[in-house]
Length: 306
Image (cartoon, rainbow, N blue to C red; front, side, top):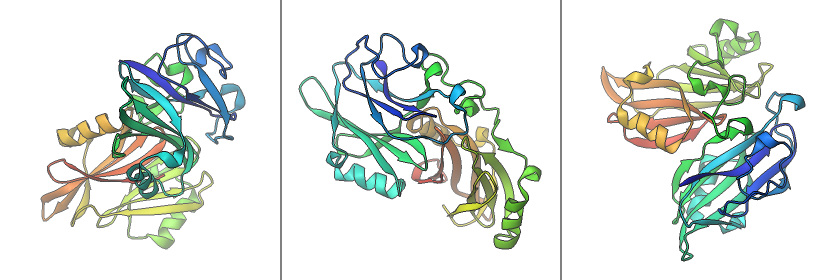
């Protein structure tokens, strides 16, 4: 199998590049710099999609690529977004409310049998690539990398995926939250216990808190309220737990279904000291998700946060 660059989105520019097939070629049409894609990569076609606000300057911007494994003798063909199976469209509408469609592909084997689909969307200003099976059932969220990291470890310090090293460079000390954020909690959620805060690559602030359940509250870079999600995966109290104490089924699901994702915060839901399930916040390609598991570590549902 070989890894294919499925999509390239210029972070400070306007170019969206997508695959025309799975065949290896030497053309790099639509790519402006040598480090954005290797010379043995796929022929690309450019489509303008607008500017992505990620907090970088034009001089330091790079392109983002959505990666996908190309099975032997498989090919991908562009299709109308509305040609995706109804199951896939329902999944996107349910889990990525308000998304903008960018591109869709059907994956076929050498005999023409459909093997799956890929949808590329824009969700809250970030590209998201989603893989579905032949029936339109969700399979995984595809990993993204900046162009300079395509053939390396997948991230670099200071890049938009720099938190993949597990050092939590995006963590904000609770004592360093803007006054407007702490004032919002005092006025609107005074009984919350603030647990952890992060700064998104676009500057937005995400605060995780608990109060007979867990909450994710999002603010602009200036501290203005944007949205709040409440999570009650099971009856009981949300108790923070380290990643090392999560069941193997939880970490295995995340590794398989969200390649390149980083666990930001995890809770065990306790009812009279009996485990009722797990709630895990992850960052997958600059989109935050809350994943809900039962007490045995079996996946139950996902809730995209921002």
